[in-house]
Image (cartoon, rainbow, N blue to C red; front, side):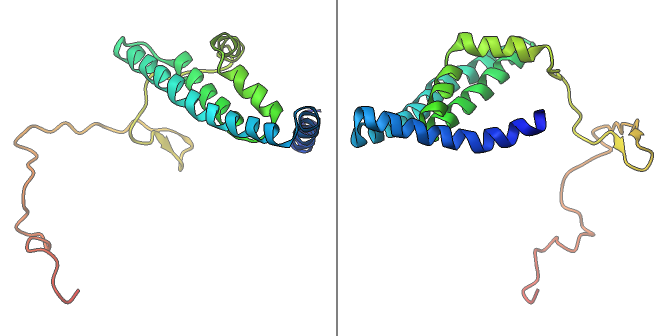
Length: 167
């Protein structure tokens, strides 16, 4: 059943959007329908800017407080997705995009997704996966003192005078 859902959605959504254009076009006329499509795209970009900056402030505040900003990150992703839906031409995608800009609706989605998502609060800058053994590796940490490492020109470097002219 899930395999059948994606092709139906892929084919059904454009057909439903075309039908929506026809119905709204007959009801309002050509130019008001086109104006609605253009205004919904502009509204998507304006709402992304306004609510997106608010979510970025929330993420920053959560990070400074030492908490993982999982909910704020999901809210931000939903706002971006909602603005993409508003920019796409069509009335069904506009309705879905407007719903994603409503904070209560985003909280409902977070409640449904929050149980299934795991937000990690730490990361490693280097890979801890060894493809040869197919398991994690414990790489040793090299701790250097200030006199063990120095930054400056290396007299043995071939680049000490810059690149040669004929190269």
